[in-house]
Each structure stands twice: as structure tokens, then as C-alpha cells.
Image (cartoon, rainbow, N blue to C red; front, side, top):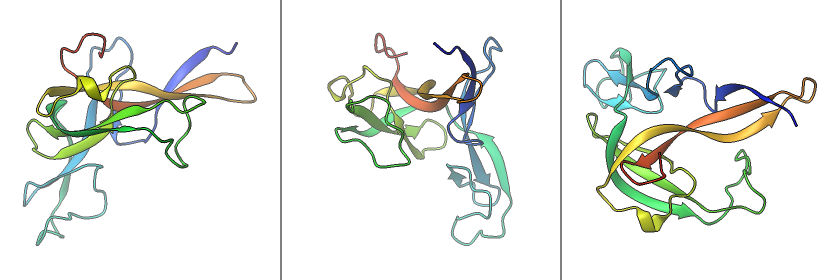
Length: 161
């Protein structure tokens, strides 16, 4: 059996993935229009999409790591590619839309495995966590890489984080 040797983000530049043991916390990376104060996630790299502020500078920022559950659903079907199936057959998972505490913008993400829609309540506090999305194996070296993404976990729900 191959040994896991490294971790990488599922999407470069969308979230801060701290080194193990560093004490840093994970955070989503967004951008903020310096003139309008509008936040963007995923981070906008070309220009501000705030109406009337296309020429404004964009500042990279770390977004709130907590927020309120704004909406949720469960994925009873397997998403189409480029989704990488995690289990065969597909096991449903929850998707949460969370309104960030400071920015008041809504960011979607999966909910950790084991949390069901029956455990979610609109308005409950959620926090950002990192979790392995899937593991890929390099055919030459046999080394495994955990592909990591952000998820929204209910704060205080036993066994969710």
C-alpha cells in the first residue's frame, strides 16, 4: 500500500492551507475592491466586478472563517466531471451556503462526511475546515497525494470537526 507523502489544495490560490503543526488556521482567500469595499470569492484577478468600479484596485484578503448557515442541500446524485468520484457507488453529501460573519457574502462548500441534512438548521453557526477530497497516486513513484478542499462544519456538532 502506498504511503501518503504530501497534501495539495484542490484549487491553488482559493484558500490558505497551513503547514501541519504551524498553528495557523485555514482561511478562504478572496479579493476586496478598494473603492467599493465589495468582496469577491473566488478571488477576482482581472478587475473589480463592482458596478462603476471596474478600474479600482483589488486587494487580496483572508475571509472570515465563520458564518451562519444560509441554505443547504444534499447531493443525492454523483456530479459530472471534473468531479472525481470519492466512493463507488456514490454516497450522498451535504452542500452548505454560508453567509460569512464579516463580509456578509455567501460562500458554498461541502459539509464533512457524516453530517446529514437532518443535523443542519438555517442560521446555525458554521466554521471553515479543511478536509481531504480524494487521494491521487503517482503511477511512477507510487506516492499518494491528498487533494484538500475547504468544507463548512457546524460549530459544536459532535463529531463534525
